Amino acid sequence: MESLKRLYRKPMFQIALIGLVAFADPGLYNTITGMGGAGGINPTVSANGNVALYACGMFSSLFIAPFCYQHLGNVSIFIGGLSYPLYTGSILCYKHTQNGAFVIAAGAILGLGAQMLWIGQGAIMTGYPLESEKGTAIALFWVIFNMGSFIGGMVSFGINFYTTGSVVTDSTYIVFIVLMVICTCLALFIIPRYKMIRTDGSPVAIAHETKLTPKTILIDLLETARLAIRTPKLLAMIPMFFVSNFVYSYQFDAVNGALFNIRTRGLNNALYWGCQMIGSVLLSRLLDSSKIGRRKRTVIAAFIVFIFFNAVWIGGLFSQLQYGIYNAALPADQLLDLTSGPHYGAELVLYMCFGFADSMWQTLIYYLIGTLSNDPTTLARCTGILKLTQCAGALAGWRIDATHVRWLNFLIACWVLVIVAFPGMLWVAWTTEDVTGYDKEIQDAKEHNIQEFISDKEDFKDQAV
Image (cartoon, rainbow, N blue to C red; front, side):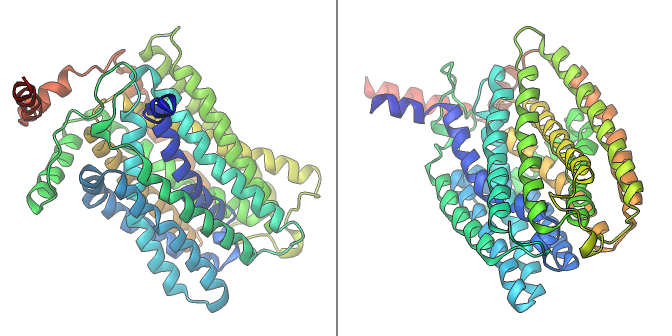
């Protein structure tokens, strides 16, 4: 029993727990959105629901989620996770009632809740492990998270195997909703950061816990703005953050949703997210390599990611020009099926490469953020800025999708944004320090009177004596 308690208190076990929450919530959500048109409902309604989602997500990531995590901890992750089954239920409802307003309203609620989950996840994943373990921690989370999308894709493929149409069956949505509710409850078992100890014996949280009041919310908001302004590396990564979620609507609707029938989309999804797991693991092996200095390996990773991304978008351009579809899917009788031979095989490889490239891009983002600090409070604020920018990118991407812009132009926009993001990415990688350390963070803590926490412990010891 004592060994189980020690295992439970290990940072990697806690990261696995938050991974299991993401396994069902964003993991299965990604399965649904990855099939294009949220599984076959009206693509415009789905896109507008995503616009509402990311518009509210921008607000939540700056004004709500960081403060909820700071003051509510893992409870905020639980509350946010419940928004995923609600949104999935709204899609099932639309299938039978054509109630688009419910989908959009549920999308807005998901925008608020998802950021509560993701900001808590970012703080835990980058703040709980040691610096030498951060790449491994990111990969561990990414594998468990994307395993949800992989299994969800296989479940969808199995349930819809005898369906050659373009709409997901009710049973798919029902299974997903049940799994989402069950795994969301796991968030309640995550150990609060102020009780966590890293494997080297150092405490995870150096910040003193404060009560949630209008004054503390205002102070936290000002601290987040101050962090953004005074951290040039964070500002340099803004284009990288933006494009990371901008490209999804093109990949999901203009590729998977436009070229394949419903059962084949499920298989494609499973393989797309399976490649996400592989990409994250491979890049993390490089990022945590003890044979190369941290700055050197981070620069190498940045070049690998950039080169591979460009290669994938070149393949996407050839695919776009080959099929000649500009802002609508192929006719139903021409949609590719898994029995379509070489044509399907080539497009499947391209779609898998999209997933592989995305996982490396996302892994590098979190790793670079993890090089900025080791304090979960600071990292939660950094993740808030990340999610704010990612929501802006996703909002722009889904809005473009909803207005039926020519997909060739959309592809070019995605590619240009990748190129624009590279200089900032490379500069941050190039200036990465071999050890972030705690000296500056402890000094900042003292400036904010957090040394009271230390004096409280000393008083307690004196009383004990």
